[in-house]
Amino acid sequence: MNLSLYLMTYFFADVSNNPELLQKLLEVLQDGEDFDCPICISPPTDIVITCCAHIFCEACILKTLDRSKSCCPLCRRPLSESDLFSAPQSSEPDGTGASSCGTSSSSKVSALIKLLSESRDQDPGTKSVVFSQFRKMLLLLEEPLKAAGFKTLRLDGSMNAKRRALVIEEFGATGREGATVLLASLKASGAGINLTAASRVYLFEPWWNPAVEEQAMDRVHRIGQKQEVKIVRLIAQNSIEERILELQEKKKQLAKEAFGKKGAKGRREVGVDDLRILMSF
Image 1: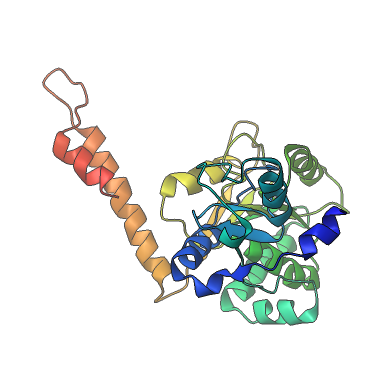
Image 2: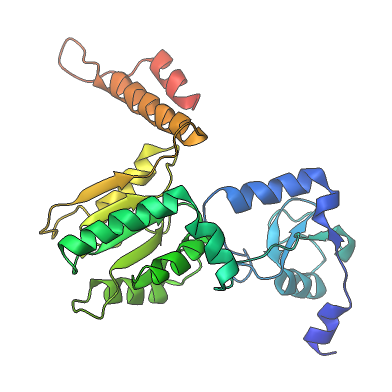
């Protein structure tokens, strides 16, 4: 039987009717980290979540159940088609005016465009990296930036290593026709890449772990950088983002106090109480 016809014969229950699994799915999708299907090692398409809370592509898990002993590839729990749940349908940005209008009305997006425009007015060749922890936000930013006259590239976890390398190479190219704004996933850009072609960094929202932000910023401010680097955080006033900044500062202070103490011989000492406080976060 043709696989496409075979898949069409299955109608999975909506995970919305299962609060525990729905919460698990939302945590994964909203965590800010890009994730892959464990079977094909690619961003999942037609997401399916199992009763044991593992997420796969619909086609991948059906093939696996058909060819194996009908168990979860990760935890080996027995599975059947009735144990699979489909993700709620959501509207992805499609590049039409509808999605861009909602985004361009955001005060934070307006502030970003203003800052980028000021840098462009000072030097048309200035290149900037805009970091966000949410891939969907990167997609939503493309339209308003394009409307403002910026040529953009995107770097996120949905791309394989070869595609990421091509994006970085294209962003680093000089010339008037090249892209001047790179929309980058915070986690996908955390290590192993060089973004010294840029001299401006914009953190579109804060991440609770300051080390993750610092790793991303270090991709721009590293050996080989010949320009002065300017870093801007975009924080919404009277929002949870301000509380995240407070948590960041508290984590930095705890780490400094825990590892900054010195014993009689000048060696750093970390007490049990210090570690307990640190691990509580």
